[in-house]
Image (cartoon, rainbow, N blue to C red):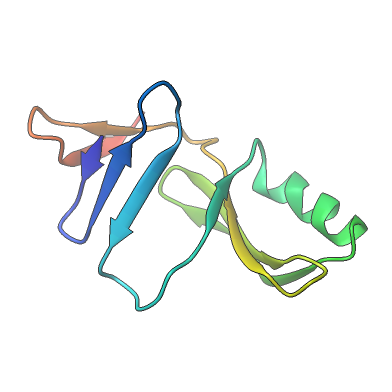
Length: 96
């Protein structure tokens, strides 16, 4: 679907889900797309989870790092600024 110098987004047929492979950080992380990262924080906290990293801006919207009540860490992201735009080779050119 898209690529940068350090990451690539692979689309999954029949859905808007994607798998992102990156070399920017070590280890794996689970990113879940939500309608609003800021609103999701309240739902996580009300369910007994906690915020690890408060909401922050990302290229396409907002993100937040949380843990569920069992200690599983997740990154919740939204695309409130738009989707990644690419050129004919799939390289990211901006957000729109």
